[in-house]
Amino acid sequence: MLNYIQYCAICFVLIVLVVILNTFFSFSLFLIVPVIVAFTTVLVIGSVKIGSGIYVKTICKSKNKTNCVSLTFDDGPDATNTPLVLKILEQNNIKACFFCIGKNIEKNPELLKETNNKEHIIGNHTYSHSGKFDFYSVKKMTDEIIKTNNIIYNTVNKEVKLFRPPYGVTNPNLAKAIKKCKLTTIGWSLRSFDTTANGNITNTIKRLEKIKGGDIVLLHDRLPEAPEILIKLIDIVKRKNLKIVRLDELLDISIF
Image (cartoon, rainbow, N blue to C red):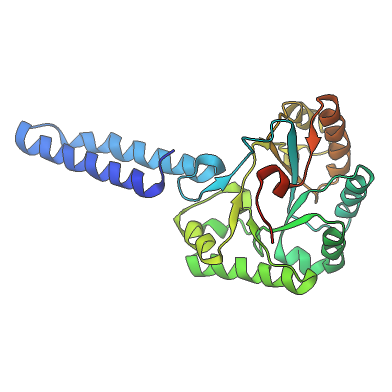
């Protein structure tokens, strides 16, 4: 997949080519319109598809661990549901990665400590997880990421290495912010869509049935359905003779 700069260069070349054709061969300048439309479409799709790599190099799965998968949880810590998720993980001797929101850590610092003490990975999921985050300036994005890094460090005395963008959306500003903060961006290869369950997890479980070796699974520990979904997912993994490992083991990366 090409990156943002390369797509811009291609678009520029095509526009220049249309202008040249118009000047010397009377081609219509309206040919520029489909070029711009195609360029815009690619960038929009690249923004919302975290694995596109157009703006930010993002790790979404393992190509080597064909019999292993890894679980990731976003948006916590949550006072009600995170403890239940942690208990289930402990009962099954499973280590996961929790991408935490800074403001939620401030509300539940003891939960973050418990998560860390149980040897789960803690990642950065911004401070506010605002719906407006993708429209922030580079400075404001960077400030949010650094603020959350500091909250995590002050709570569990660990440097953060991993980052997951809110909603999985990326853009040029976020790319610059992530580079400044020297973080590794983690996406997913299997999205549970558990946030749309609304008490009925049937469709979520159907999607999780597709799990295969190398997958990084996206879940949310803030949801009331999270414990039930996790229990059923563990059963699916066992039935498929897969092994759940911690994210750093799945991807062969260092988190220290």
